[in-house]
Length: 498
Image 1 (cartoon, rainbow, N blue to C red):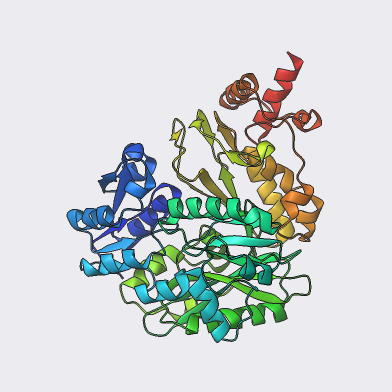
Image 2: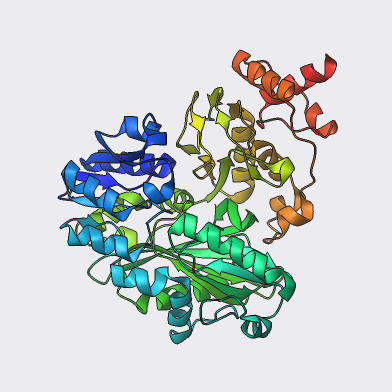
């Protein structure tokens, strides 16, 4: 077992809580960090100790290498887990952690430089013989129209230093480049502290499929199957499942081999994900390698029975991966949906406010990783992810049915969320058939008017009162609720009657 007595978690929200839970099971004392906005946050209260790292702005707190390393040293931690986002793929942060005599729970800094930088990762993948999406080989500067014309329009501008849809813009023509480039740079700089942008060609009707890797310091490499991540808005994932309904055994073998080659091009250990685009003919193209834990790691945990966060920590402590990890047994089907504070009826724009009601589903095959609770105030400085709802069942149809049931039990009051969209999705014909691509939301999701303040209040009141289920009259009225549950639907019905 790991020899770390104390571990600092350089993150916030649900991923900080997830790491805290792994620490508890390994007998390690977890230390939280917080900005002034998070002084009363759930992850702070669940940790054994907490350290202030600065004001609410991420650049002065969660992206401050000096503040976090100082907090780790102050706390007496032996190791630092970066979670995902923020500094998780920042080589300078990894070097600062190890330079302070602490263990960084992640790949080596040199690997972060080689693969965490998306441009460098493209070059490494091509050198390893893995197909890559056509794009620029260098960072884009103002006026690089010749290079972009060679890529072809439409294209995607992407942040070299991060993922999750941050710093990404689709551009249809050369005229749209200046504004999109400026916006992408601003967002990338805010999210990752690096405004470097490159371009890739848009692959039509593509699916986004990724392979989960876990490697130890002794040369062991586990290929933990693939995840389907094609349902996205603003180029950020909303739904993930494993295995992918689009991947047959022969395609899976090709994807795993390509992922192995990419990992073999560097000194890799710990957790990473190799991401691919899959076209209509099942040709695959390397997108990037995320040299960190992924938001959607839980679906892989459900189909393998492995604790990926626990193994991240154990690998960082020098343990070897046993045969049960190197040769995992896969079982059933898992689906994850992300519950966001955002308005799917207004382009999935983030929302803010106070959560007045919070009830998550339970029962067989249901898992919820949440970073908030009732009476939490949502801040605009941070990602609007509230929780990840995961289900596991013997096959995909059963998993979809379980997800429908779980969403019907979900109650979130006080803020607009994407739960109504997710409830619509589970009954969408294309999703149920597994016949979808990254364009599903744009092609199939219809928009309705958002809730007004009175309707939102009624939804929250009905949720707290626990009214009985009713028919989904809200859909018939083309009016969303701020939760997907029967309680929310009943509240809308009452509002219409009055």
